Length: 286
Image 1 (cartoon, rainbow, N blue to C red):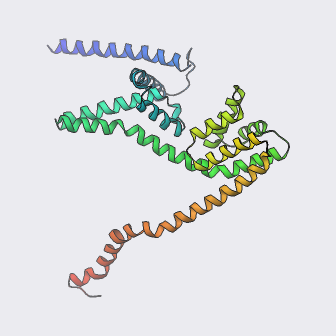
Image 2 (cartoon, one colour):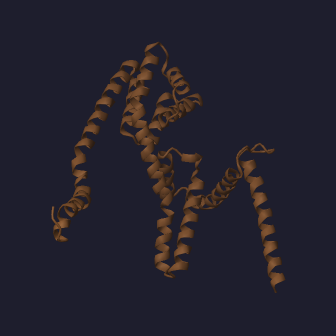
Image 3 (cartoon, rainbow, N blue to C red):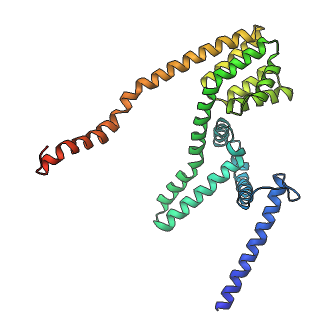
């Protein structure tokens, strides 16, 4: 009996290794790493294969719900976050499905309650959305910090006689990488692919939820429609954005005393009272 069990386990492991080898070859070809050109470690190779399999699983689900409101909402969330780690919408839904099943099955094994396991599975499936929201907030903060400097660079380029397209090209090639540069790079790519300047800027406004970026896109579209000077428009925009950012920073600073009340009342005051009056209650003296 032991020999038969060991043989079954060995055959299962061999089949698993063969299956993983096939999956590895398939996903290396899909990701463009053919002929042994993959230069990463074994862990990175495993992540490529795992992401490929998750994408396949999510693709089956996405084929059914892609046109629904849930699919549209998830695509908007992924676009707002900037598609981190080159994540596709199929991979996002694959991770949602896998995390939901794992969370539900794990809680069902531990607790045995069907309703609680279903609720846990649903909450687990929301974890990728929480991660995307965190990435999107960081991305918006980085865009907000980089926007005035990028506008100043555009003012310098357009003031030197360059067109708007050439100014964006110079800015993309000379500036360090950041989310705002990536957005302008997509604008330049769409214009090179045949889109008009207004259409490319509207796409950028739809991708970015940051109010200042939307204001910049709307102003540039209006300047292009009316034929006004882009350089002077960008100069005024940069000044207005700096003023609005300064006002928002002052508003956050004014909220600091209110936010400090909770840790002050529940953490600092009890410790202070314990140090001051603790010896008295213990029978000691100051």
